[in-house]
Amino acid sequence: MSKEAIGSIPFPRQGTTAEAIREELLNLQRSDWRHSEGRLPLHGYFASTAVSDIANEASSMFANTNALAPNAFPSCKKMEQDVVSMTLHLLNGNGRSSGSITSGGTESIILSVKAARDKTRASRALRRPNIVVPSSAHPAFDKAAQLLDVAITRVPVGVDWRCDVPAMERAIDGDTFFIAASAPSLPYGLIDPVSELSKIALKHGIWLHVDACIGGLLAPFVRQIGYPVSDFDFLVDGVRSISADLHKFGYAAKGASLILYRDQEDHQFQYSRFRSWPKGEYITPTLAGTRSGGPIASAWAVMNFLGEDGYRETTKRLMALRDRYLAGFDEIPELAVLGHPQLTVLTVVSDEVSVFSVADEMRRRNWYMSLVAEPAGIQQTVNLVHESMVETYMGDLKAAIAFARTQDPDEDFQLLHASRVVTY
Ligand SMILES: Cc1ncc(COP(=O)(O)O)c(C=O)c1O
Image (cartoon, rainbow, N blue to C red):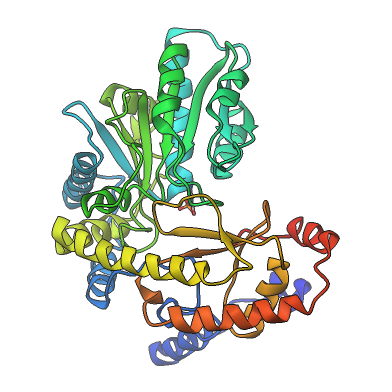
């Protein structure tokens, strides 16, 4: 469709039948990649068909409720409290901890920065308020900084591709009110040294946020089944808030994340309160006004359907699958896995071939590719939809590497490509 056409498409003059609409929706869906086919390395988080069914059913049952109005929809309030409470328990919150369900990781992160800024301002003046994050942190921190009118410094990661704690400390000044770590970071899949960062946060009296959007509902179960996982949650003293996505490894329908606080007093600074208008007091905990109960119900349903045992069993299969990917990458001499990933986000790099040429050939073989710009990498976020595809993937990857070997491994080509990598 040409660009000009977009503004000129009118409403259809008459409506049509529900049947015709369904058919057209199915038609539209045909152009999308399907998670279930296992050819998407990200965007889909699958535990089982039964889990997806209950997640989707709960979501549509509550799609038209409004968590903005807990008096009208006490069901939403109850389910939100249950989900917050269960996750706080998982992440070692205490009796004073609390949190909210948001629309996604981005909103959770924006709210953490708002709460930290306003809490800090309540006790001291900030002349040039700023936050300091590792270079691998999600762009949601920059979005938060822009929206909240605070400066942001991104500190290059260390040689192990994790947050460089001494460099972070050097970047802190008297107006820094917030630092962050990822568990794990999206580009590298590695958990930052949260305990080390906590020491500098406590020393300087600064808020430490852990972005566990990917790991929040995965890492605790990975640890429970016996894999090593670095400390990242409220067990670490200096951690004041954690973002954890329910719509990632929580397996809820999309549109659900958590922002959690060690202390409910900090949580209060996230709220907006307004009464100078004709309709009286208007209080919202999150950025949204109207907030569908659908994603809340979806998360509640999946958590109760799976229970801790179900998450543990799913995680056992998931980590076994991840180990098959690691073994597969290990067999390919041209490739190296970046760092020592403890979870399921794997980034693969190469000194010998252009991974972007590899990716081009993989695309020709009908794989959706997730790339990393710096260093040039290919990424796989393993989840259970990939169980039946791992061998096919590895076979095609070997063939794609053979193809890339025939290409000129031109450094300029890599650089040019890296500058154009679209994260998604
Ligand atoms: C580590 C991390 N933080 C934050 C986000 C943002 O989450 P969302 O896309 O749900 O806003 C993502 C998304 O992939 C992420 O991987």
